Image (cartoon, rainbow, N blue to C red):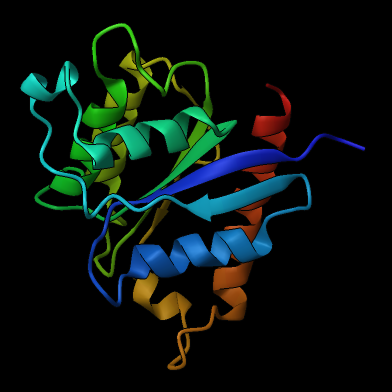
Length: 182
């Protein structure tokens, strides 16, 4: 039997009724037994400030420790003005510092983006991928998943529709295979 790998799930939307949080929860529910997945919250993190590299505030240290302890990272992001949300970028920056002590390096990662728009947060996904690549996160190359009209993947009770389950299952199966390679 394969060793269970722990996966941090970072949700870029801080909104209470976030589509990306629902997507993340759907992915967690579809994860195989080889993955133990948990959302690591980012909304409470103070804005990154290099002055904190020498003496980090507790939320920085707790976040960095949580990411350092996992085997991989999955990012669920909406799009804000053709890029990732500020909270997502802030979390990426906090985890990458201080220089030479990035907690991201060498981890298998994946990005899924979701939006009620027709573009599926493509711009956010590409900007996030660019940042993760320079941090030595091994981003799953395929399937690139941009969920357009993602609000329609959930029924009125907030549960995944059959179509939503099929899309997320395909992504989750590919990510589980990606993580197993590491």
